[in-house]
Amino acid sequence: PAYGFGASGVALFARVGGGIFTKGADSGADLVGKVEAGIPEDDPRNAAVIADFVGDNVGDVAGMGADLFESYVESVVATMALCLVATGAIAVGGKAFHLVPDVQIAWWLPFLVRAGGVIAAIIGCFLVRVGEKPEMGALLGALRRGTNTAVVLTAIFSFLIIYFLGASLGIFWAVLAGLIAGALVGESTNYYTSYAFKP
Image 1 (cartoon, helix red, strand yellow):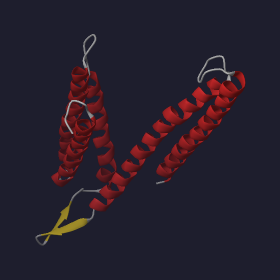
Image 2 (image 1 turned 135 degrees about the vertical axis):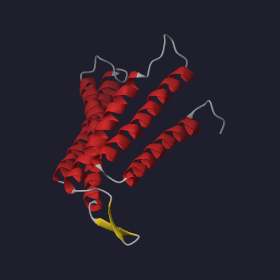
Image 3 (image 1 turned 90 degrees about the horizontal axis):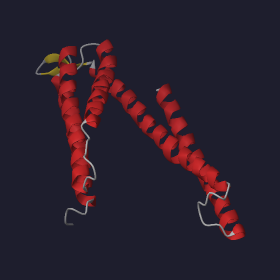
Image 4 (image 1 turned 180 degrees about the horizontal axis):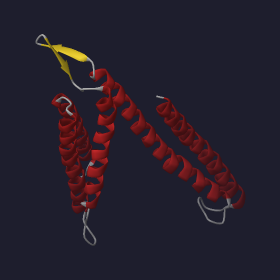
């Protein structure tokens, strides 16, 4: 929990601090460049433009990275907490049933499933290939191929990890539901924002 709280603090300060720096530098560059010197926006002759670009990098690149890192860390912490709760016995048909056999497996399970997802994502990235001067359909097809491959491989890795750790296959169905939901969100976003499909 402390690590997740620290990640949240870093993400907050990186995003907000970068935004404040960017806006201040942008306002100063525009005021000096456009109003006083008559220089166009983002012209390299204006030294304040460099500070504006630095602020953009801090807010957009480092801030976004810290945001994603924070989301990832907190989802790992939440999953570990849920796995610890799952070590308790559940009464099913008058018998005690454990979703996760013991505490040690409860700690390892989220990390191993995440590691399988990272390996699957790396393999999926290698499959995103297009030729010279590709059309938009080829680009989207390559991205879809990489994403779908990563989803399928993550499902396979998750099943193997959960099975060999002796955890309940109900956890695998939860992982699979999350993977399918994520893939459907991506496909629906593509459908509703692409010019290739009618409204």
